Length: 135
Image (cartoon, rainbow, N blue to C red; front, side, top):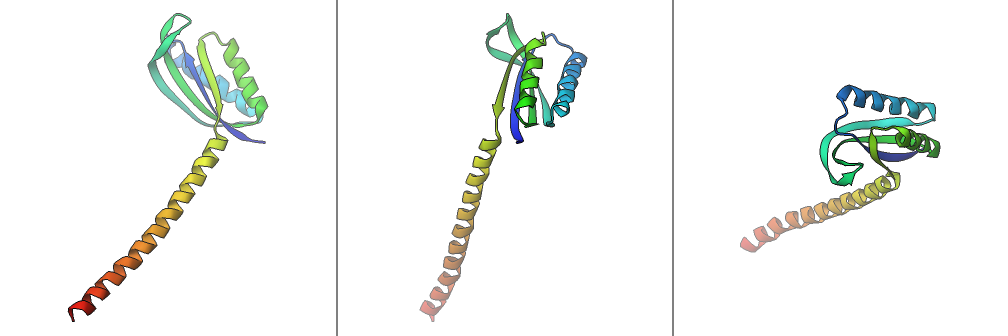
């Protein structure tokens, strides 16, 4: 069963762009091998950490959106654990949240549609009533 996950990891601030690209491509190549797909990779850049992690105050943030099952995430987390430049990572399942947000959006759109129809109906009735009152 395919699910959608966000995988955020932080690497050392002194890591070069070439090394970071190599790490990302290694992780991306591991995903199809375990039966998943990479939806999006976003390098968020160097940011200040909220607290010191392994004597680092800054880190380079990378966000990966991955679709797949449990073995995909298990393999990615295993690779991140043994990769020395990675100082922190977090995986979050987001498919249920996306379904919930889509449902809320559909409800809002339906309410807007009903409200637009009722206001259009009231707007059309008002000029007719004014015209008959002046005549």
